[in-house]
Every structure is written in structure tokens, then in C-alpha cells.
Length: 397
Image (cartoon, rainbow, N blue to C red):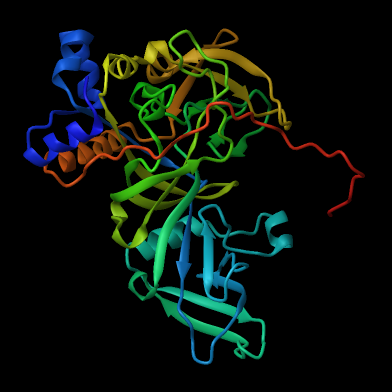
């Protein structure tokens, strides 16, 4: 019915019709799909949730005398330095300490890579302490200084895995509390934590990734970004319902964007007690309504989406499940497992996810954000392989 070029023309003319995903659900119910598809040009979706699969690339510029960095800490957090004299990559999940003994004994501060990234985006000073490999061209042995966002040549987020298309619900059927990447789990099914906003989630409204791909412009941390590649653990072959939505973790995307232009409101460091640091990140994805099939995918409701309930008390890669529940059940605040009512709580912020979608809508309506046509599709046949040990076992203690 329409093309991205035609939608961009309407954006430039100020005549584009944009709905947030929340508005779209209501409008589709009110008007029906056939009438709604004639009305709306773009639907905006948003997510604001912990995205541990994130990190920042940065270039420091050369000191005098110059240094070839082989080890570097930013506010005590180890940054990777193995691909250029003064290039660094800082992972959001990197712990503040690099001591193996202290990590084993639980002696870590509740701060990490995500906090340092958020501080730099907020233009706060960060201490840099580096050791160098002394060579004829890089004679400096160490560097201690303070960096800020504007004193970096390049500073951009490159996130290998964001925006899971569905995920899991975590519970604890054991006898002791558990500290996990989804937060604390109380024993004997004391609570259940889920990590997706269901019918509001960007990729659950695009079950076959119909309108996104490499080169798709998105909103990342309050500024323009792009889908750069498939995400790590991308698994589009996950089992699916007749409505094409997956029953567990499926597609993911790798994202990139200029951190110097990001808004600290949408990039925040966080920490999971007993597990480690992460990064709360806002991501907005526009869905151009090119035809009726795309709009029909956006009509999916929480009762039409299911997710597996996983028992984290079993410390194995494959854990037992309590079956599937719908997002409507999760959002009611209670699910029933083995005859017991279990409290539920979301890890993602439904409110702030909606605000990301609203921000993106307003930018499109103001002519500040145009859509892009993907230069290549994301793969739909990628398998997810586990890592098993096939050779002799080595004691790493």
C-alpha cells in the first residue's frame, strides 16, 4: 500500500500519521485492520530495560610521548585494549574489580561498566589508569588521567545483543534465595520475574522481522542509532505459535549509535545484587506500515503471547520449566504454578518503554526522524548452538 520513500515524503510535508504501539492497539480494536491500515503510516515501539549485551567503543587520542595500551581501567573497571594503541571497548557487564580471587569471594563493588558508560554520557569525569607496552614507537609505560565524553575522539555504543524477541520467566523452586541476571528469586516459588513488555515489545510486533534489517534507523539512548547486524544468540528458528510469535528467546539485534549525542535520561547504570552490573537502556523502533500484514502483526495482544517459566534452582544449561504462561497472566500480578499463586514483577519498565515510543513518535511528527530501508535482511535460519567440552577437561581453579 505504501513505501518507506512515500512515508518519508509525508514526514517532510508534515502530513504523516504516527501512532505509538499503545495507541495502535486501541485504534485497531476501534477501527478494524482494514480501516486502520488506510489511516496510519508509522507505529512506534519502545523498550527500556537492562541490556547487559551492550558496550562502548572509544578512542582516546595519543598522549605525548605516545602509549600502546595493554591494560586499562576506567574508574576501576577493566576495558579491553587489544586492537589498537589507544582504542578501548568497555562492556556494560564488566565488574569493577579484575581480581579473580575477589570475584570468587564475592568482594566486588556494586558498580561496573554500565555505570562508567552512563557517567561518560552524562559528561561526568572518569579516571583512566593504563599500562603500556614499551616499544620504539610507543615509549610510554603508563598513563593516569581523567577523561570526559567530549575529550574522546570517538565514543559510540556498539551493543552485540539487544531487544530480545521474547525471553523467559524466572522462578526458584529450591530452598534458598538465588541472585540471578533477572534479579533476586525467592525460594519455594516466592516470586516470578519476567523481562519483556509483551504486546508492547518492539520485536514481538514484528515476529518475522518484516520491516527491519541491517541499516534500519532506530532511537538508541535518546539519539539516532542503527541496527548493525544480527545480535548474538539470534535464534529466529525458535518454536512459534500460529500467530508467528516465538514461545521463548528468539531474534536479537546488534545496535550502534553515537554516545556523544545520547541523553543520560535513557542510559543508566544498574546492578543486580549477587550477579553484577548492567545497563538500563532506552531503544525505540519505528514500524512503517507498508501493508495490511504488517499492521496485523501489530494487533497482537498480551493474551496471544506466551513465555516459558524456568526453574533457576537447577544449576544446568537446560533447566526444568513449569510450562508456558501468557503476558496477560504475568501482568495481572499473579500466575499459578503447581497450584500455588506466585507474585510476578517485570524487569522492564512498561511506563518508560511507552515514553520511548512517544518520544520517537514526536520526533517523526516534527520531521526530525526519517525512516530507512534496510540494506540487507536479518537472517531467519540461524541456529542456536550450545557450548560443550569435547576435548580433555582442564582444571581452571
